[in-house]
Image (cartoon, rainbow, N blue to C red; front, side, top):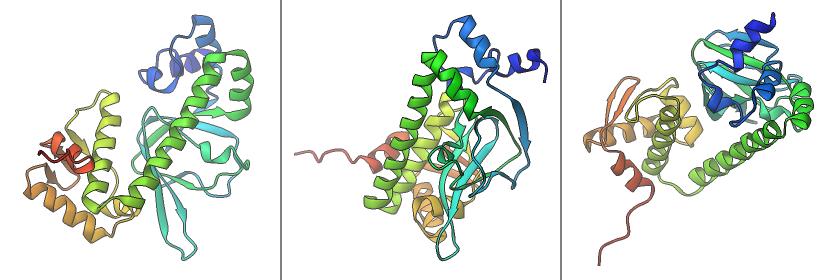
Length: 240
C-alpha cells in the first residue's frame, strides 16, 4: 500500500479523535500513519476473527458494527459485547496470543489492521500512544465490570434501560442523534448480552413503549424520555 493511502487512514480520518491519541505532534502523527498495515472489508455475518485464532493485530473499526461472542459449555452463543466505528477490537488476544472470542460483523464493515508488534514498538517511542493503548484496555475492563454489575443485580427494565443509554451515548460521541438509533443487533442478541430471554427483551421494549419512554418500529428506536430511562437505572431518592 503506498504511503499516501496509509496517510489518509489516520491523519485525515474523521474518527481520529475517537481512535487515536489527542495532542500528537505532526511528526508523531506521521509515524502513527505507518501503524495501519492494511484495511479489511468484512461482509455482514462473517467473522473478523474466531476463538482460537492466532493474535497478531488490533483492529480499529472504520465503518460498521460488530458483536463479540463465546460459545458456552452447553453449546450456546453468549454475546459478550457490541463494538462500533471508532472503537478498537481484538484486545482479548493480548493475554495468551490467541483470540478467546468470535468477532462477527453485524453489517458490512471495514477495519484498519494494526499489527500488535508495531503498536508495541511505536508505544515505546511515542508515549502518548502507550498511554492511549492503556486507556483503551482500562475502558474495556471497566466496561466488562459494568456488564457484570448489570447482570448481577439489575432487573430486566434496568438492564435494557442501561443498555439503550450506553448505546446512544457511544453513538452520540460519533456525531449521531442523542435520541434515535437503529439497532444493528437482534432482540435475541440483546437478550444474550443482557442475560435475558428473548420474550423478556420484547416485553420490556413494549412496556417502555406503553409508558411513552421509547418509540419502537422494528429496529428503529427513538428515545422519547431519556430522564425516565436514567431514573430506571438510578431511581431518584424518595421525597420525604
